[in-house]
Image (cartoon, rainbow, N blue to C red; front, side):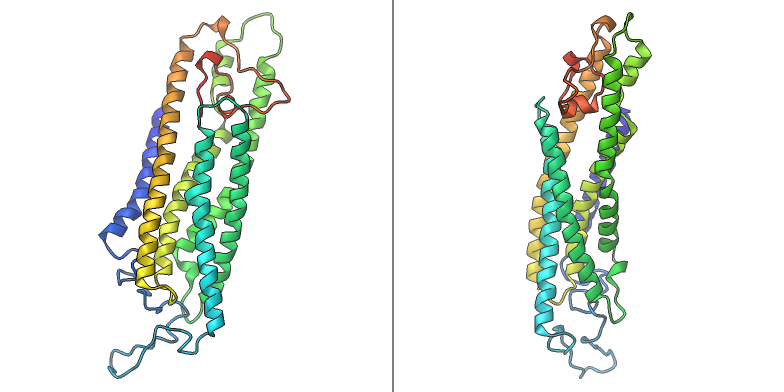
Amino acid sequence: MHRLQNRLLQLLLLACLTPRLAAAWGGWGSGEDCDNPWNGTGRGWWGNRWNDDDDNDDSTTTTSDPTQAGVISSSTATTLNNVLIAHAVLACLAWVFFFPLGAILLRLPATSPVMLRVHVACQLLTYVVYVVAAGLGVWLVQQVSTGGFSAWSDPHTGIGVAILVVAFFQPIFGYIHHKIFKKRQARMREPRDEKVPEQERKKARQGTWPGFMHKWTGRALITLGIVNGGLGIHLAAGSPFQSDETTRSASIGYAIGAGLMFLLYVLSVIVFERRNRRAAESDDQTETEDWAPPSYTESQTPSYTESQESGRNPQGTTFR
């Protein structure tokens, strides 16, 4: 199981680094022509309705300003630009800062159940923020998908919608895992005349399938969310409202901020996995008669460590 988790973690790292390598290779989010169908000239947004180039007529005058071409009014252009900025800021806060932060806080070496409550509250509120960001994005896509251009076909849009749907099930997985955990705890604390069978002990130590889904779906979503932010900068590079300088500054700032936060998140996961593995090895050496599940009253919320490791020896408990 630990080898599988390490392999999945490597795949997540590869998925995050691949678009950054593509950005370094050239053109990504720069507004320059690098297989970008609208190559930073406004050619894709609202189709080609105001940038009517004709290769056979060098005298054709062109403009990349939709307001000058009469495609939209200046007030509409201002609204679209403001919505674009709001969408970018909210989505960036969600996936680059708050979602990773909520996961990192949960792995701090603290046994207090407060961290679990903070994690739940942080992730739920952040999901609401992302719902707002996604709503703004959908509205923006509907406004610019005209004239033969459809932003719905862009990878950024598809990934964003997919993330929105999958993230909806995250709290459900977490809740089901917690209910199974509580049931195991109640069973393990039932009075018995004989010691707990080894098979039941092993089952109590194992995580639950909803817990596994919750953990790895969360890791995948954070990775995809960060990558999709870069794809969003690439898409916005074709906006007539964004200059090359603005796009370049946004790309650099996003790469630095997202890269540092993702690195911090990955380090917290690695440290947790190592602690977990050492604790499991320590538990295997513990005498059966000395074993007991973590203790807390039924009315209390367990710490994250207790919730993830259902029946671990208190002496071998790790922090997640």
